[in-house]
Length: 206
Image 1 (tube, rainbow, N blue to C red):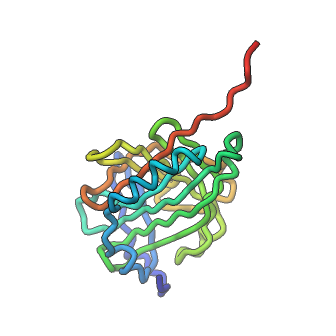
Image 2 (image 1 turned 135 degrees about the vertical axis):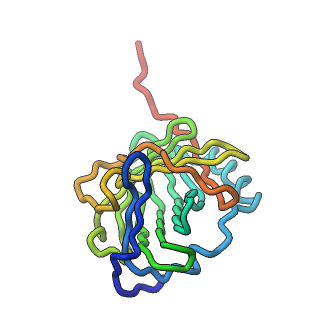
């Protein structure tokens, strides 16, 4: 991704009872946002195998449904190893999100490293630290995500920690694994997400 000059007039708001997701800037993210994000069948088989060797996982890439020309994409590759089953804060992996006013257009983007992952059934909550972005105010801060993996043939749902703040803040005080409920819907045919359920260790009773 190339980085160019920040522009405010590229920001748009999503109305979900109130104006929600807003990002701004100029992102040279045409390649990332324009590529085919539909996962091949082989990815599903690999993820099935991963369930036998990981405590939890959140993977996949998809665009969000919009009635406008906006191009909003989330990508996750988050994992909690079996040896860290009792500590979600030891999750590893990466995340990326891109919000453009149109495919290949102006907008904001960020990528970072996962620092927490909790899954319950087919719902995941994760956080990560922003390591690269064209939105300098959020660099080094923590952002959160939530995903509802609704299964084959159904539209997954996505949420994020800045749902009610008008845009990602990169809050350094945001607690780990904290996010808003998954209120957005994936755009049909653009990809999906896969959640590996976590089975946390429980204290043994008498």
